[in-house]
Length: 377
Ligand code: ADP
Ligand code: MG
Image (tube, rainbow, N blue to C red):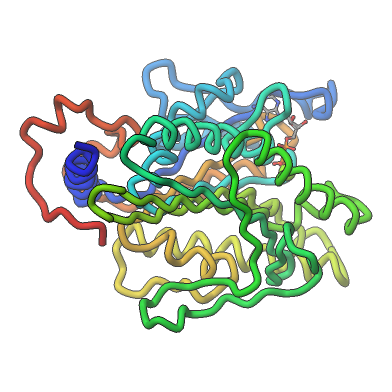
């Protein structure tokens, strides 16, 4: 029964992808905080459209600039509401899809809040794993699953294992020797996790590693990409069918344009690496969305590492984080332009706003789904 459901879902997915592509760009605006100060620099510069939850307006230097994304979350949107829009992506890993969720934006715009959240109000990372555990449990009568996690960071184009014994060691990305074209990272630690307690232990472990090695964790984390890589292996006991899906949860380095403000030495070097890898990511997403033949995955460690999870029938969500404060409008403008650029490509006749996030019900699936080949690649 599940196998049939899987095939129907794939069929439906393929059709949606054919029509609309599989890359979504969301925006999330954080609330004004104490850190924004109290003067005019902390005034609110972002407004929304009551009739259209995909549009936001930015008041920049006295002019209103409007942007249309796939969806926009206002400051009052809760972690639950945000997660509701991404949970279908998360569960598709169980069906064998690869998924990337990126948080993009300047330092202080809410990337870590969205991905990690707080202990009282966890973000996507924690909620995603929790959901995977419960979904896997509900299928346990027919399927065996193993969920593993890796935690890594990319700093100055060097990839490091935050769960490894030698976190200083730089890891290489290699092609699998089996000729499958898949990539892997020799030496990257994977922990099998079975409960929320397990993942808390893993996060704690990775966090401690990061803290003990950095003199200023906040600064360091704003200049490196943090990756949580979740792999879901499934085995249908009755048929022997195997699935592997990967969920990549990425808290990107801050997108602020440091190089232009007279940075020197190591700070300038960091800024150049960050600019390079963020624009490489933008180029890859743009190329995928516009279905260009050549996708420049190799231009950065990040896109090379995630190549398998960005191409084929993988699904990508870019969450562009925005500060609403007056003092941040220049950076906000840049972030929103980045967002528009990666989603600006026309994809077909169907409304671009139709939601891939909400899968059709079982009844709809059983009904008349336009036919395409059932395949995972
Ligand atoms: P970044 O990771 O992009 O540098 P953070 O996630 O650390 O930014 O957010 C900066 C500050 O704003 C933090 O104190 C965080 O708790 C707060 N914050 C961000 N987004 C929200 C939100 N949606 N609701 C409440 N507080 C938020
Ligand atoms: Mg952060």
